[in-house]
Length: 215
Image (cartoon, rainbow, N blue to C red; front, top):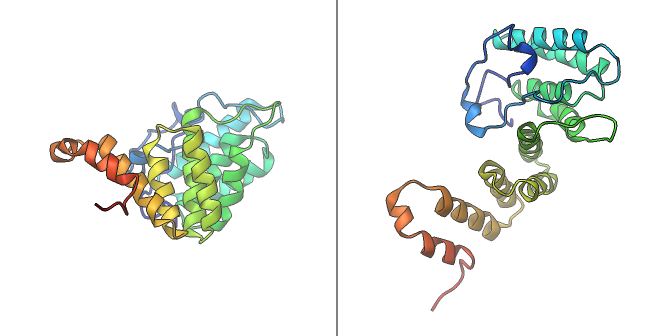
């Protein structure tokens, strides 16, 4: 599973702002919840209002904890709007939180596709989709694809500590323990609020570069 163990509530949709409250969940700590700000297109059907209404209804079901019904609605909506990246992202999440990781993959991949004709995900949602796809690949045992996806995410968003953390996990699974540990040590050194860690930050960063160094 990628996120099933972390949350019952899936990502908020801008289309639901007047329809249902947004619930916080443990997964919010990853800052990867889909958000359709700036993506509200209709996938080429010319019916934004209907698309938004159906998306809001599906997210409303999710907010009520009716995950299976929400997934069914989103799957149907994704079939009707195959080029709509936000619907694809919401649908990926709906499968992921139910433990249907393999089924989530094509929706994540669709959400991450960009074309000149259609707008892509917002920056925040793109971060989340890259992490979601990479993490899902990892729990499916598709480690090389996980590393490639998460490494691409880190290259695109080098300031994203969550992407670097999940990349470290995927690298561990591929046997690259040195780079995995190096990434985590550098992240701890850069972000820890523990004053004792801060005291040794320079040493941690130095030794992280070559854990085999001796004198």
